[in-house]
Image 1 (tube, rainbow, N blue to C red):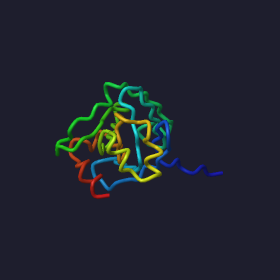
Image 2: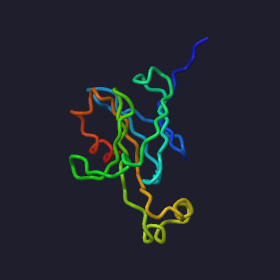
Image 3: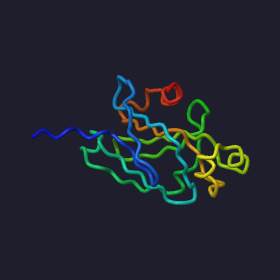
Length: 146
């Protein structure tokens, strides 16, 4: 019996996202788009699975709130980034901090999701990058072109 390979994925406290491979000749590089909402004042659980850098074992990481602060990437776009282990880093692409205007102007589906989340961070995608390609690849342009 053949066991199919695991599908690379990232899971937060609300959803599981399938990570799609991005062409990068320098190493493993994955992205998942979604409606991601992060409370910057609480610990943030993330589970990565199906990646060779994890020896195919799921990896639970509890991210401290101090690591959930937005910072500009090298192109000035806001991101949240943190290491998973010595081989992988996660980048979360930030849209904005949720405020009253964001809530009031959102469509009904999104409004219901963010109604009580003023001050939380709305994000558009996860990017998981192997450290072998991290210093040479262009994370933002890859994420922005999707």
